[in-house]
Image (cartoon, rainbow, N blue to C red; front, side, top):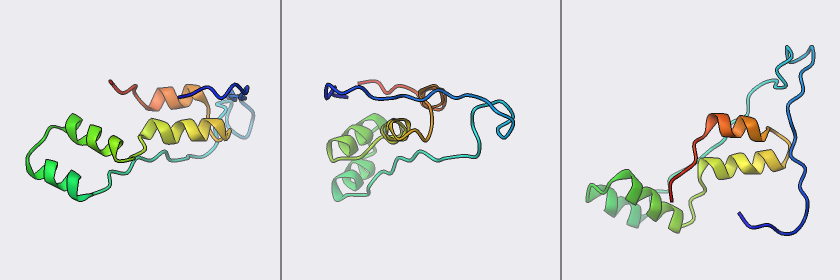
Length: 92
């Protein structure tokens, strides 16, 4: 992630009666979609491992689960702590 030089607010969960003191109310999904491009289909048919398929998909523009989560953190929809709790860091 590049730093644009601007300061970004990152919200922290604060409990209340409505959320039963958890700081969260309801659920919000974070999503990752693997596009079935012809290149992706070829490597799947060739029985490539999951890492190779993922790397190809990312090179072709696929947004990862954590990327979608980061967007929701920046929008104030969820917290960084929750994003880190429900996702894992991807190996390079």
